[in-house]
Length: 95
Length: 486
Image 1: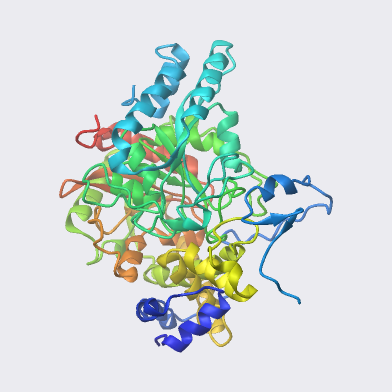
Image 2: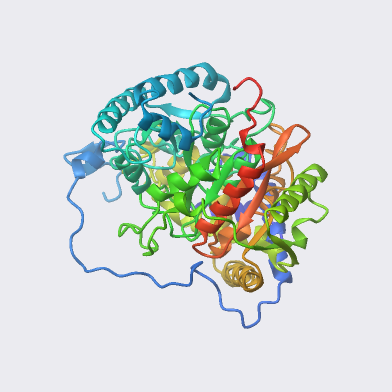
């Protein structure tokens, strides 16, 4: 199958990713090539094969639910584009 | 000084042949001389390196040195380095100063290694040519019109050009082995979970693994010994003891059975690469190995399976880049609503290849396609993994080519993502199955280096390194220097 410009619009919405109007045709063509590549998977007989999520077939390790990290808000906020009184600023969400 | 391997450098430092400060200044001078053209480094951390070198010299004088104390290295710019820009090759993180060290960085620092700088890479490690970097392409030291491979292309070029004796890298689908092969050096991707992923910027978390780019297997053993081991801060870190790799490689090579996958030598393989790899297999036979033809029946599906699994994980991992807490924020972003804000920051902050992978990932995970693509790919991943498990019941290691061709020209494949993806046709299987694998220089095709790939069962790094070390004692491909860099 291939992905048309409507599909690309939907994916851009799902992924929160803006693509310029003049780029959509190229993105659509290249994604369709990739879809053609991954469509080769359909040729495999996978009846009864369990999906593999972890390469070593191990389960997630658990740890005690205790505080392990110190509060370093000020250090981390040095990387923030816009902060005010310790808060991260974004466009207004609620009037 | 720069022509010493990492192991010889370490010995010379402890013998007092030269100081770490002299060596570090020499390496920085070579970076200054050659890197304007090569573009292997994104950041050179001169002041920090000189301070570290002075401290290393004091440590050596006090008799408190480890095998790596005073040895210069470079880190792929995917590893967080406290107080230093960590860009991941992306405009998104061009202004990101890491607030902490990755475990890999912390451990190598503690061993006394000197960080010369951060190396260039494909954006978010997505690429096989180092051409998707926000900071521009890296040139191959063997041919300035060719790519060094990727995504750890800066690390590979820096080591091949003798700017630094060793560097770190990461390998999600071949990103250490493929550039090592194309640049004529030794690359090691350890078992999934062997080296901590903490502080290593995530691409595809079930595949990502940190490793080494060096001139020799002996050098890789030294670096891995310092990097590997359990880390409670990485939830998939393996809690297994770390062998003394640098000692294990010196043991005599036992009578190995080496599996040679027939389907790694199909029509897609360049004739020069095939000849070099076949000759290398003959060399391993001379060292006492028995070759056995095997088949990995599902390996032709590894690229399609990878291009579902990896983008799916990437679309999730990269959702954290929203321009709120760190990273790129568009100058226009505050003018619109929150949804448009996210879309603009991400659309402008990510390059074309990263955007493609995020969109493919979103698509294979979306309603109506999840079972047909994502779940199907995870089942095929199981089949590929089982092929290797069956093979390792009959053979000790699997050997074949690392790449289908030698280094290709700059710009030759950038217009066709699928052609670019097929560079990793022989390397991706080891990532899907979580296996350790290496690339070792084994000859030339058309004047460009060729890599021999060795793949082993889980946690068989010692055996892979030992095999590669004995191969390098019997051959001299790994000591060849790109013209102009001697």
